Length: 358
Image (cartoon, rainbow, N blue to C red; front, side, top):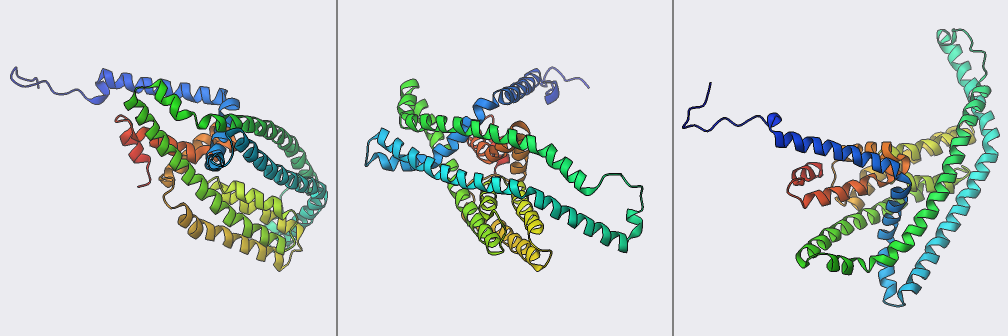
């Protein structure tokens, strides 16, 4: 059916609109280019963003100290205190790691005994499950092979983490030095209206990130301290190491809690006698994690981030695939910043409101 001269032509479908197709193609090209650049420049961007998150935590204390002493003295005091705490904690964790390495042969023997016990129990009760042909490899051989396979990647990851920590410290120093000059630089570079808009968006980003980090640090401490005390009370070795691991893993939503519960619980079963003690320790650790997830974090975090759970899972998958475990640490604050920035543009405002948790 054709339109009469008095009637306007029917609108084209959106998929036939050249402008819409061009916009979609440009968006795909921009997304692919951003993914490529973020992956290739991970060694630069990842420590820089880690340093930015630490700067958000330290900047309020730096601002308070500057009212008492000069700027360089404030940086020196704050940097020395932060470095001292981190060095002491790192030495304690490193000592625990060395002790755990010495403990590995005994833990391997313990794991072999548990495997033999489980095989005997299964063979006695359900003989058809173990009636297949033998593989010719004993459990201790399989465990030794797995330990050898995991040792080198763990050492490489530790070396990379040490180098990245040095870069984070260097970036952090410069970020703290430049933070107070940022508003003046923006006002000097842009027109007054545009400068105030940029500073307003930056203020909202700062408030959101600081709120999230402060709340997350508090909730992680509330979880890590009872976990460490429970493990110490049951005589599980390296309780400090597992408490630090719990604190760090709590910054990774959902997945981190599983790792923080599984590793110390498995170690407790390997170290303690196969009696009521490892089961009691596992039950108390599970109670700590459930209480933290259902009571403590909702009370402390509240709506500090404003992201829906599905968006949090998607951001974990995206940044974890891109940057690994450090990307998972950065996933939530980076996504929250992206939502805040998109909220201030009419073109991306509907997407920002869809990503929000409200």
